[in-house]
Length: 48
Image 1 (cartoon, one colour):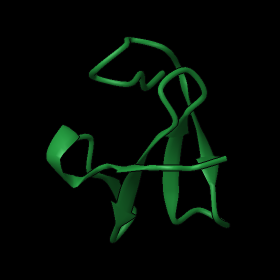
Image 2 (spheres, helix red, strand yellow):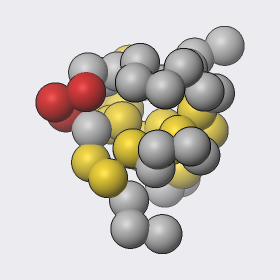
Image 3 (cartoon, rainbow, N blue to C red):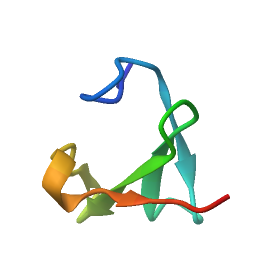
Image 4 (tube, rainbow, N blue to C red):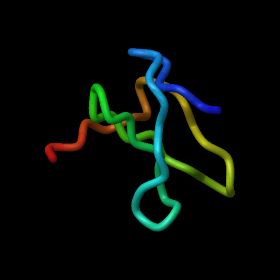
């Protein structure tokens, strides 16, 4: 199970497999070549 490195809550797949979103802090971590990039500086904050 993957968790957000910031708030330690589970992440869920979004965008048809393009990213992993944390429901708590709304950060979306990209997935590149089937590898999740769980770096805080690469995450984007989702407005919704």
